Amino acid sequence: PPPARWAAKEAVVKAWSASLYGQPPLVDESKALAAIELVKDAWGRPAIVLHSPVREHLDASRLHVSLSHDGDYAVAYVTLSS
Image 1 (cartoon, rainbow, N blue to C red):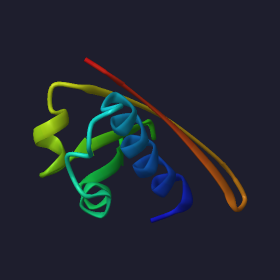
Image 2: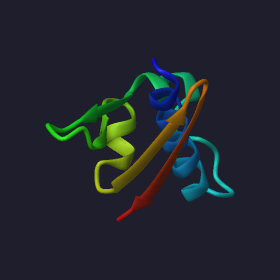
Image 3: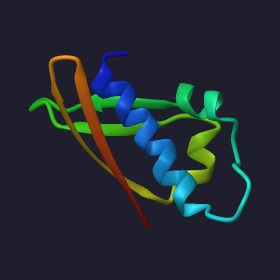
């Protein structure tokens, strides 16, 4: 995926991992990355769509995403809330 989309997937995994501090991961990271999709609405605003197996663990949570990029550099922030 384009760098900003990849950064968003990584940011979801990091936010989820932070919420599990002191506990083992619930899903292998490569499977988690494959189950995270970045979509955009008609105005280009990004959103995260989760697929199995990640959806089963985070379905009750809200994910908020912000993306930015400039040339070869991309950054994504994701917050996880209930």
